[in-house]
Length: 187
Image (cartoon, rainbow, N blue to C red):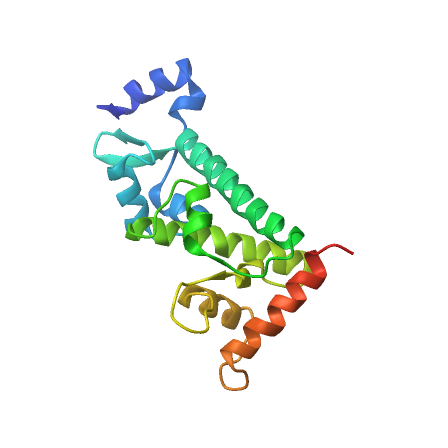
């Protein structure tokens, strides 16, 4: 939406405040935990709605809320998938099946970034709840021993759960998987 003057914007706002509420790009970036250029890219791609008033650019508040609601639904779907796995006693899955649950593919770089954000949110929530990281169950497909992807290691190291100087990755995955199964599995 584009308005030539503040008066034009305020007139439209009076008619539909919900649809015309705005937030500045830097605040949206902070809220979504992304960079301002990433928010600008979302505006360009149409995943957020832009409102321009004169030469000033803003993000439609309603589109931020809609994006947040959609992401929360995706987080719930992936978390549900992981909890169902645990209930069945399964300790490992790969990115493809969980990405399919939310309409993503491993071949699209933006989708890989998105699943990383979803898993990061699930991991932080499970760490806050029970002191373990559910995404330890999600592995990359590789020959031989499999383990979570690079984003997982950055997150567990930043949370103080993993010290690469003191712990072997495979030992950490094995032990942390046992802890996840114990805390979230059937009593």
